[in-house]
Image 1: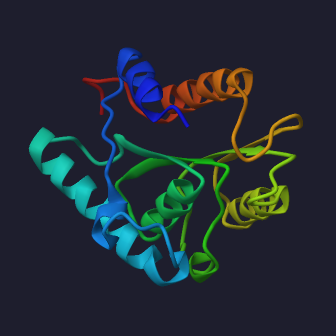
Image 2: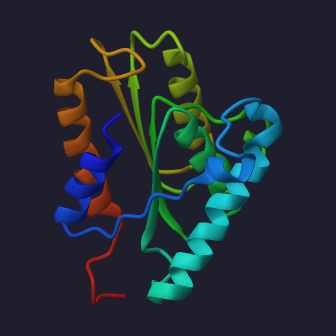
Length: 176
C-alpha cells in the first residue's frame, strides 16, 4: 500500500499524520498476531500518548487509520481508548480477543474488498454488526471489484472516503 503517498495526501488536506511503527516492538515481525496484538496495540497507545504530550493535542482529535494487520491493530488499540475520534479499518478485522472489549466503539469507517481472499468480506460485515449492536456510528463500504490490496482506482476512491470521514469526525482547529 502507498503509505507515504497517502500520508502526504492527508497531511496536505490539513491533518497531522504520524505513522507509528508498532512492529518494532516485535523486531519487525508480523508473525503470530494472536500472541502479539496486545503488545502492538499498547505500542500504538504509547505512540498516541507521546504524540499527545509533544503536540498538546486535545482528546477527540485523534483518529487511527490502518490497513490489513494495521487495521486490526488499530481496532485492538481502540479497545477502551477514550481519546479516539474514530478508526478507519481498511481490509482488516477485529481480533477475536477484542470482540467483548468495547463498552462503546469509536466511529468506524470500514473499507473492504468483496473479492478479499485474505480477510473475507464477512469479517467487515461482522464488525459493522458489532458497531450497530453497540449503538456506534459506522459506515461500511464494500468495494465489489476489489480484493485485499485495492487497485489504483480503488485506492483513490478509498482516499476520498477516508478524507470525508476524517473531516466529519475531527473538529476544526480552534473549536471545542
